[in-house]
Length: 435
Image (cartoon, rainbow, N blue to C red; front, side, top):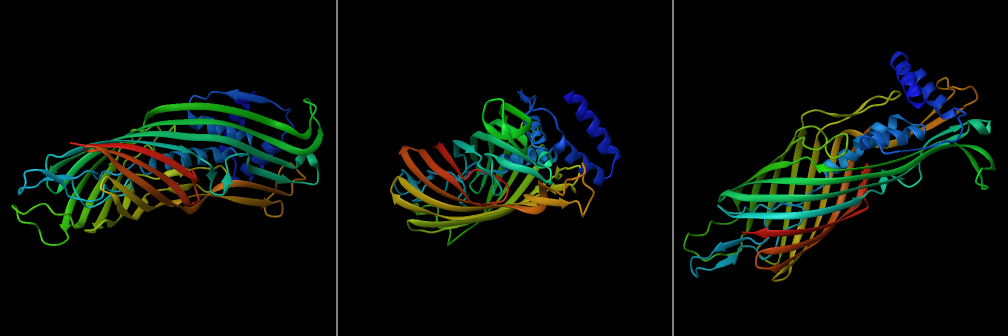
């Protein structure tokens, strides 16, 4: 019965104009079906979100939820490629000494390169449990509502969603020349979806369980989990300039004064779109990096543009398609040498996904457009808009040189502004080895 209804509505929407598509959406909301609970473990996580939003009466939001989740996971910061314990051989003593008093940022970049033949490997664990979709809490999120003089037609659609991602990032960098680094980031991503969605009306009565409440017309739960590769990144960083005069070959090693660098990053479509681990497109970012400072306090910053080979569409049968394409990213921050083996940092990171993606409510009244069935005066539902996705994060960090050239990194990504899907605070722990 359920698969037949999906075929019938989908076929009619292909043949009908937007007004009739809207009427069909309302008809699905107003259907006097008996209460039912369907628990499924879908083939993909995208299908899990589709099933949940359809039970809440807004099937078009399923595509939006799927794309919003994939965009957030695929564009979240994964960590820095800058080495922490940067050492050089001092020609005057024959010993290796640090070229920087600080151990570097946890997520931003600095202009310093590794040095010819020097390499580093790091592992970061990023654990995100998503709280909000713009201003909507994922717990008991109201997605649709109809207004009518008849209680049976006064309906609301809700979804409660537990959505999380755990990303293990393996990062390797090697100095190809004194001024040029190459590297790669390999994210292993686990995504979990566990949700319940339902549609209820305004008829309040004693239910089968003995409690007094509204009639539940439809109810679905969906559970899914996926683990695998995310979108792998390959990168190169070239140091363009050094602040101050270059040291003589036989001079003692002095603290690096900073400079400018250019960094190129290509993200490959290795993560599954259907399981929300990737975007399914190739992306390329070019960034300009600046870092400075000779004392205990060192500022750094960067800005870049990420090109996407094609847009990510958020489709709807009743609203215009919203296409996300390209990203602008920037950051600025400081590093403070709190102790010889301890660095405290603070970064501000901005991400701007162009083309749209912000969720917002839309209301259609019977005066604007015929609504079905007769008696419904208005329909309010959440939809994707063409407003740019703005994301602003504050990242405090601590780096500790635990032994030799091994570093422990503790940080957190706190959301200060975000009109897409986001976690209010994401803890991150990492280990870094230089050799």
